[in-house]
Amino acid sequence: MWEILILLILSALAYKITDGLIPNLKDLFVKAGLYGVDLCKTNKDKIPEAIGVVSGCVFLVTSFLYIPIVFGNGLMDRQHFPHNEFAELLAGLLSICCMLLLGFADDVLDLRWRYKLLLPTVASLPLLVVYYVNFNSTTFVVPIQLRYWLGVSVNIGFLYYIYMGMLAVFCTNAINILAGINGLEVGQSVIIALSIIVFDIIELRGDQFKAHIFALYILIPYVATTLALLKHNWYPSKVFVGDTFCYVSGMTFAVVAILSHFSKTVLLFFLPQIINFLYSVPQLFHIIPCPRHRLPKYSAETDLLTASRTIIAKKDFTFLTKFILQVLTILRLVDKIEDKESVTINNMTVINLFLIKLGPQSEAQLTKKLLCFQVFCTCIAFVIRYPLASYFYDK
Ligand code: UD1
Ligand code: MG
Image (cartoon, rainbow, N blue to C red; front, side, top):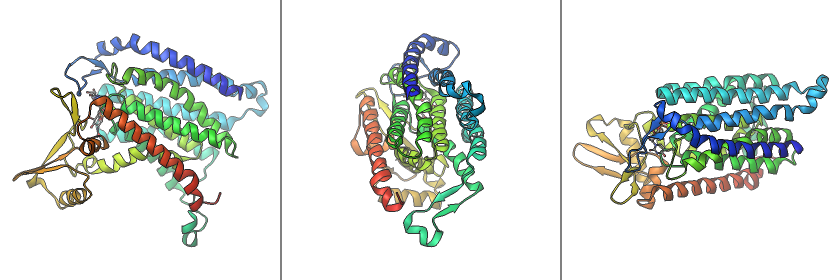
């Protein structure tokens, strides 16, 4: 356990370094043209963008420094060096590193959505290769209720690799589309990471303890550097984190989920992101028009946020548009204003849904409520994972 203690000390240092670097480097980002305007404020100051690259680099360097500590015994006794575990850690860090590079390229070049789907797929390849070499287990355990038809487990073969690739794409983009108000991207990532850490600590006594220690090696420095970023990104944001941060975070969670073999549990911690993704599908696939920004609308008079909207011309209605609108209206999930020629609805994000249900909110209040929702979903995830799981799976 002394390795974890050293990791905690290194991570505390990483926090301090990230916290000091961000204010020192932010002018360089503005000078390089990497800045954005806060769309929920009256002032139009240049806010440095893509600062996730700073916390991401410190996170990776901390993890690199930690390698000789984790494998210290193996380095002394090279005949028994754990090559498999070493390859896993290196492949995981390589995937995160790739994502940092590709995410930064996205922030600089503002890539199109199709590339946003391609980048995590490419970056997850080292991970999938090491999974193939070390485990190559492609079976799913079937819930007790379905075993009569499917048997105890189902081997889905190559499809399992597609599932893992898609997990990386989902984790990265799901955080990126639940974004747009100060502190939300970073806040949700911290809560997800802490939830996985709590799960790892609970499971340390189980027979999979090695996999859970591996997850802790990656997540502890991640949380430390991300907390420092949150300090500067919290309302009112002095820096924006950029897509770099969302990609690094998503890939970090995907690495942990895949290499520690608990992808279903990690997905449980992504409940708000899954809801936001499903709700966003009609706009993401352009069945309903999707503006460049779907973040809430700011009113300078009241200093409050209200749901932002999109207009659908009635002449562009398809059967699918009508059907989706009808279902969402019945479920009371859209705020619809109709006139002769068009229908105006809220942009379909959980952020806007909160504003419709709770009324106009200040930005800080809204972020806090959304983060409370994330914590609430973590509690649900633990209930599903522990008391309820024994109903579906053998202990
Ligand atoms: C995603 C969302 C988009 C949302 C944007 C906000 C989808 C399909 N895309 O796009 O709807 O508007 O994230 O990040 O759902 N910004 C703020 N305040 C913040 C954070 C960001 O005003 O707290 C603005 C700034 O102008 C910043 C810009 O958003 O420059 C960053 O947007 P970017 O991350 O490039 O947008 P996408 O990830 O493409
Ligand atoms: Mg973004």
